Length: 410
Image (cartoon, rainbow, N blue to C red; front, side, top):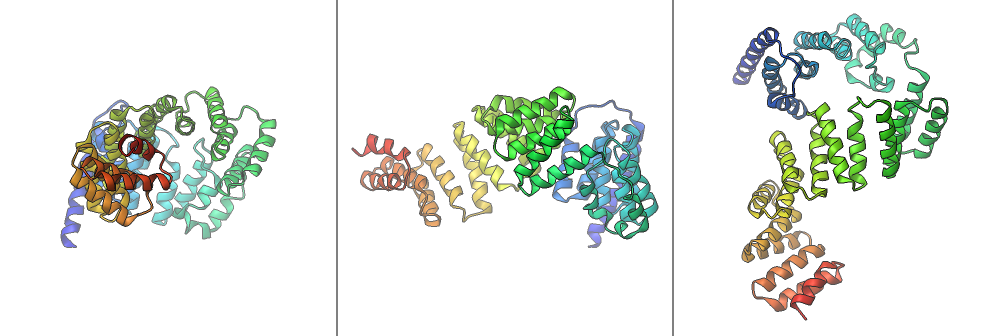
C-alpha cells in the first residue's frame, strides 16, 4: 500500500510538471496524438492515474484543444482531485467558453460547494451545450445537491423549449421501444417545425431502431443538409449505411466521424466491419489492431481480428489471435473451431483434428464444425469417417457440406 501511494505521488508530481509545461507551450489545434488516445482509453478502463499521466504529456504538445483538458479534468474528478479538475475545466472554458460548465458543476457538487455547483449548472442550462433535463437529473454527481433548496429553485424555471421537451419525450419512447408513439410525436412536432435538425435526427434514430435503414439514411442526410458542419451526425448515418450493406458509404462517414472524435473507439470497430464488407482486410485489421492496442483484453475483438486475418489468407497471424483467445478462455468451442479450420488451411491436419474434435466436445450441435472435421479427416486420409461427418453436417442443415460431399464422397 505504501509503495502504491509513493507511485501515485510520483505520478502527480509528473502531472504538476506537465501542467507547467502545458501553460508555456502554445500549440495550434492539431490531430490528437497517441498519448491522448491512451489517456481516453485509461478513462474508459478506470485507470485514472495512467489517464492523467498520458493526457498531461498530450497537453504538453497541444494545449489548444479543450477536449484534452476536459478528459484530464474528468480523470482528476475520478481521483477526487477536485482542485485540479476545476483548473482543467476552467482551461477548457478559456478555449471554448461554456463547454465545460457542466463539468465544473459536477466538480463543485462532488466537492461539497453547492453554491458554485448551482452557479455553473445555471450557466450550463443557459448555454448551447445544454444537456437534456432527464440526463442532468439522473447524474449521480448531483445526488447530494438534489436535496437542497437551491436545486428546487433552479428547476422552477422552464429551461427547455417546446421542441426540446418533445425531444425528451421521443427519447423516452425510444428507450421503451414505443416506436409508434415516438413517430406520432415526431410527426406532430415536424408539422410545426419541418426544418428541425433535432427532430430529423430523432426521426432517423427511430427509423434505424425499426430497422428501416433507408429511411434512417434519408433523415440523417436531411439533417446534414441543414448543418453540414455537424460532424457528430456522420456516426449515426455511417451505422445506418453499414446495416444497409452500403459499406463504402459507411467507411466514408466513419472517416468523418473519427476526424471529429478520434477517441470514440467504438467507431474503429464499426469502420473495420464496413471495411470487411468491402473485403478490404488490411485496413480492417489495422482498425482492430488500433483498438486492441488500448483494449487488449477484449477477446471478441481479438477473435474478429483473427477471423479477418483468416479471410485475408494470413493464417499465421490468425493462429496467433486464436492462440491468445484460447489462453484466456480454454473452454470456448468457437475459439477451437476457428483455430481448427485455420490449421486445416495450413495442412496441419493433426492439430486441426484435435481442435475441431475439442470444439464438438464443447458444442456437438455445430454443423459447420462437423463439416470442417469431415474435410480434415478426408485430407488426412480417413475418407470414410470424413464423408460420414460431412453427411452429418448436411443433415444438420449445413448446405456448404454438399459441395464437399459431391467432390469427395460420390
